[in-house]
Length: 373
Image 1 (cartoon, rainbow, N blue to C red):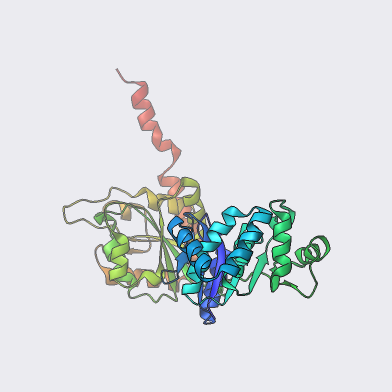
Image 2 (cartoon, rainbow, N blue to C red; image 1 turned 90 degrees about the vertical axis):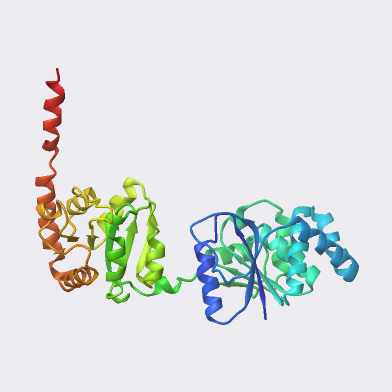
């Protein structure tokens, strides 16, 4: 069996679709995605998944192919199209169905009972194979092509829906047989099934050499992925992701890019501790005092940092020699071993930060500006 999965990806792949498809893949059910719309979004299909979108050339090939090889199927689908005025859906279905034929599709499933189920029904007529549909919510109240969609639901093999409330509506308001409609709730993907007990270490720094990212990724090689996940915020000229891939530590690193101040504040609150392995660069560039460390301390976070430039003037623990991956790995391990002390360490750091980085520090500038001239 190969399943044609008809869905929309106008804002990327919906998370519930992604989790569902990952589980189908785990259960060895082969599928091809047929997206009525494709756009950018936070979730994307896995690289080895086959994805098809609307294409005028494919539509012409499909129309010609079904007209010449399967005229009776073509005529039935065309008759349905004319009667319900489903031209847009018919053109998409022709392209999709011809591709489904080439790939041996034996079942069509539409996720959402809006345009997707109309495309699935027309494709099933052209392909002469069964189809099913999953209903969420907006389809139940939408008036778009309601008569055509009602017929598509009645003629499907199975109608799945995500709540008993919806099932009652489909039986009562859409006159579907109770035996046809099944409550089938969405799944929590495997990432959500297991609680992540790993320590969350946050790194916030521009992607430049003096921030010590090369030291960090080498140190992470000595820390098992089961013990830690590293959130990296930043961007710049240095390809830190390539460093992580080369060091084979991508399984414990999450690249978050450059984030808004509000999101950074959330990450600082959510992480367990902060790390910044600053070092002197190959050109002699050094830090003064990294403000990211001060911000993490103000949020009450323990710190792992290097004995570099002005950092030891403020940070008392945990400090390691700069440019030394093994020393950094040892410092991170020490932090992991001191989990019970994190609240006290964080509170001390907050007190230190509020003292050293007081708003009163602006007074020297204020007085200079006021007495200028």
